[in-house]
Length: 150
Image (cartoon, rainbow, N blue to C red; front, side):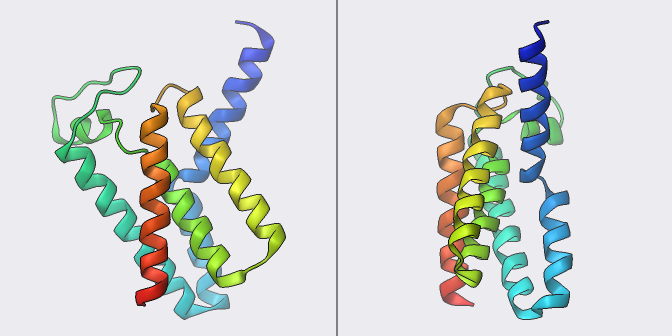
């Protein structure tokens, strides 16, 4: 394996972790102490994002670029490519934080992180670009709705 491919593989494997429940759980835990009501709004947005994406994955099973086993219930969920839940999660988190904190540096950094996480999903051959675009749209729309309703 070429050294540069090894570097990129490891970089994007690390970056993709920003779209996991571990990261947003840590953010929520920190925010509970800072602003409890905002933390609750964020939890609602993330739970709804997770649920909507999960329902879509089960209702519309689309094979990933590198197919995965899909015999058991969880395997079917995991094998479905559409939409990218990693991208939806990081987008929901970024939109919620930016709506609350309204800071130019935060906007730039979170937008860059959303793009890089989305690209990591394509680079690692877990999703197609349409999956990532759908995840972005779902995360953004749900966060905007939650922000305006709650």
